Structure formats: C-alpha cells, structure tokens
Image 1: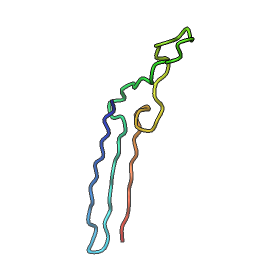
Image 2 (image 1 turned 90 degrees about the vertical axis):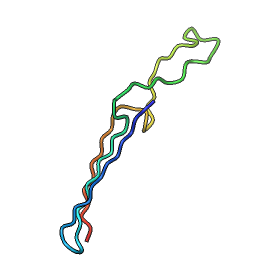
Image 3 (image 1 turned 60 degrees about the horizontal axis):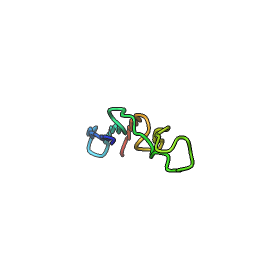
Image 4 (image 1 turned 180 degrees about the vertical axis):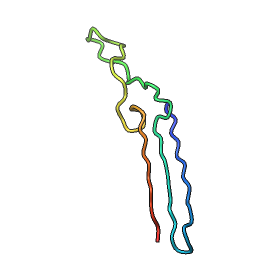
Length: 71
C-alpha cells in the first residue's frame, strides 16, 4: 500500500504573470512493499518473498518539486 500526495499553489505576480509551485510525494510514508511470493513449486524458496516492488509508485519515497513561471 502506498500513499501519494500532491499539493500546489499559484501566486499572481501581476495581471499576466503567475508563479506556480507544486510538490509531489510518491510513497509518502516510505513503506516497504513486498513483491509477490515465489510460485515455483520445485524451488527451495517456494512461497518465500525475497524482493520488494520496484515499480514507480511502490518503490522508495520519491519527491518532485515544480516551479513554473507563466506569462
């Protein structure tokens, strides 16, 4: 299970200019997500979970910060 959060704020710097700040946190609490167990019946490690998931949302905590100037 992962918790992802995104928050942003736009600051008006004039009539036509704006500064937008946004932050994104994937796997906010940095929880370890186990991979599927070994399903090979002939293996000595049958049923054992030996790895963690490495996909984008299930890997370690990732933080991205964005700053955009709109004009």
